[in-house]
Image 1 (spheres, rainbow, N blue to C red):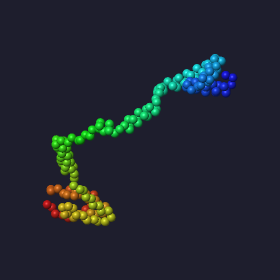
Image 2: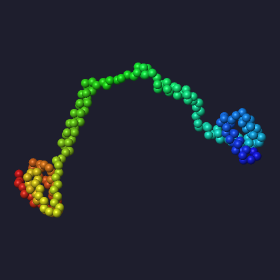
Image 3: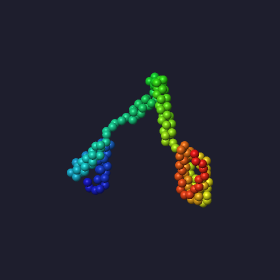
Image 4: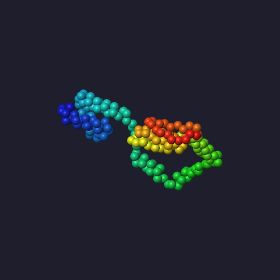
Length: 179
């Protein structure tokens, strides 16, 4: 190793040798260089050790790409007659009991929905708001309500048979009949 240019050339040559890409002349030149000096041998061994460590985790696979591609084409583009013989069309099996099960599920769902609606649903609520002036409203039972300024009345869309409940905030005058 006389100067840095020779070192660079021999490092490239060492890489080609380790990768099995060196010619016979390059191999002979590299052997001569390695045997010439202990430092050269030490450097060569360091390059080789680094190569081995970097290649340790890589899987060694030797694949003939053309052969594999031809196999893929053979499978993909095989004659259709052989494929159609293997394909079976399955008809859905719907028996009378299957249809009855579906009908029962639908009936149960509709019945449950109806009763839940009847239990949970409440009649609509109405609001009348008098902000700047007196405002009149007629309740579902025919009662006339006159709301004073800044008053609000809330009542159901339909009253019960015995009680007529309203929520009043502010002042109002009611004119109606008792039952």
